Image (tube, rainbow, N blue to C red):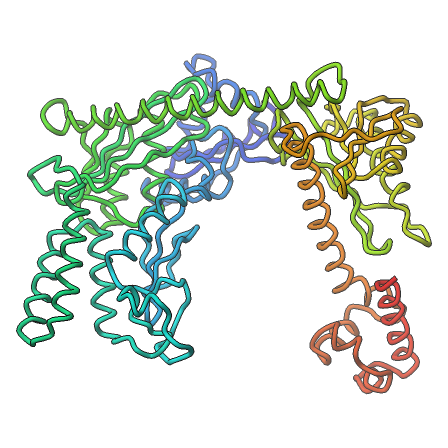
Length: 614
């Protein structure tokens, strides 16, 4: 323990709040909450403390500590949820990257709401349902609802003003055509309310509403409308029949079960609304290795319901959790009604938990089998690649290199990495090319990038310490030769090949003729994938560099143009593009810009344009 950390431990207040552990680089390792920061945080460092293996590893890496005092434990819980979502600390149990858990959005802020997938729930006047375990169940639900209810199906937003002719969906009775100004706004709003009822699980109430509308339409002699409602009722009833009745008390509840093995952990959820099982999903957890189900479920509850739009009155858990009281208080505040966490010991609720556990174990086994199958496929591809390239070992780490520039302007290089056949984005590296020739020279640029990469490894730079089993150079003989020259000068040898894009020719050192693999070769597909990823990464980086230069450095590098004059010029013309289009007289008309400086600005801007076009 360093002196700074020791001093901070002594000054911890005995108040509720959130604490943050950091490593030597300032990265957040763990976020936790406490009723008393002083006693909770200091407990990690007691010699007599019985810590799990995971917690011991955490304590060994702690170099710094921060804390935020809150008024109540409830405020600490909310803050803890937000900080975990923001930092995603490696030693916290976390919902696997929540980008995988989308929402179903009903755009009630629009005149004619539509259904769409959303990656985040926002406070924007729309209704959100979820989160779902992936995009597939969202699209399946949208497809079902579009079949049951006449909503806008093309995904476009309309005001009700006619903009074009109605499409086939209107003539099929599937869309009321607000695009053509044919939709009845009030009737459409009724349909939207029915969709909300369906998604909220209020099916019986929805059916009563539809029956009443059908009877009213018949009384008004609107037989076509009544027939359409009859068909809609039958379709809704068919969906409801497929849902299993699991209780007679008509209570809304979620049922949670936990399953884990050495490599993965998940929580299975049953969604029961009005006594019927309307859906089930499972969510994977990261950082749950070595944790018991109580801790895992507790963290899942906080992170899932922090973003969930529908909180039931009862949540069934397989085991009681430590923070049950404060989580109930938090959920009650979120829902506006009482929410109870319950661990049943017998009866129908206990059987529900057992059923959820069975489904959790099945989902875990399916995930394990998929992982094993994918791993076997990846291993087979690596072995095939080893054989066709004549490598001593399977290329478990492949580094691909690419150069991006426009006629030598703003040249950059990149390195992307595949580990065990999968992208390892934390190992990706960017290189700003220092070599600026009069004419573009891709070979020299490639040589520079490979040289700098290997030199960093020689210096012991941890970011470049691990050498690849295979270097993939984007290009033909010339680019491969440049990489080999770099290795020779640095004094390091790494297996390398070149992959030319036009005919997918593979060039190997010491071989004059390229190697051509069958187009359906998995080994070739892997090489193409990493080459294309390198190209994507290089183009993306080059675009950023180019944009930065075009918006800032062009003016910054002109003698006589400081920050104030730059601001005056951009404010006067509105953009750099308009400034480039201006004449010398236009520029000289700007206050504080003499004609001689206006001529210099004009010349420099057009010199940059000439350089851009090559």
